[in-house]
Length: 427
Picture 1 (cartoon, one colour):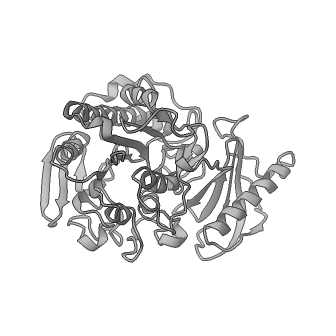
Picture 2: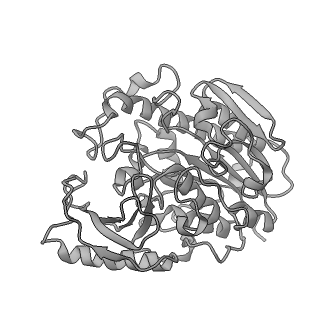
């Protein structure tokens, strides 16, 4: 019988898909060449807590209850770690959690066991963006005792991950490593990269979807890319350690992120919108236990597909409540379904060509929505022209409405009722 793989799930925070390139992340580009990069991968909720809840519960926000940040996961749900535990895996979580606090309840203390989603080994902070900065901070262990660290945060998270990886393991393990980078530092309003590294990226061209728009990317973009580079170097540390120990051949590695970053060009924050800058995320699957071409890397992928994918790779049973499609199934999506919150309550569907979204304003308890955005990504790569009221695209909008209605119903929501929007957003 084939040995079950060790699985390492590496999760960055607020990382755009286009940061995976030779200039910023050469190691990840190399791993993508050895394994597969899934270029059409999108989040199912472009904000930290809700996206993480989708990963840990396998369900959309309307089911798991984590509609916005500051909502803890339900204790009674079956979680990703529960399924791995049942399959005989050791489970471990290191880094940012963001799924325990009501508001900022666990900002300065450890997450109790019943709010850890079933993970048996624990070294994390619920709100790492507040309990640490780019040069130090604190996590809490299984006993809710402080574990303080100094130095570059991404490096230290990797140190902790390597401590776990290098332990003796009688069983296969599922290790979830949750970095904060390249998320902005909430306590300073900056992207806190390793000292002296931002200058390398001062002349990098801005992405087409933010260039020329009002936002803060001119000030922050070099530091943001330097944070991505720091992650790239730390993934290489993990890979090299696995190879040196002889464990790489039996390891499956998934690298992805919770959402992207539009640098306040689309709303007053960094994500929380339907635009590809918010929703388009990296996904690389590699490692000695993965064979290049094993999965179809050309198809649409949702973040919510990854829980059943890693469970299937482990030979574990996928809970019936999980809504994603395991990538091993061969099933091809015609769209990715996205919930949007905090900037307003919205729903969105993304196909390989179009983006369509609707909004109910800030009413989270309704099935009445108004048209919000429609983009043709093929003709408008920067998503600068909102076609929501275009007569030429009326037929496209109707088809996208049908997809959205189907996805909402399949997710357990009421069919939407569409109302015409009375004004037009140009971008």
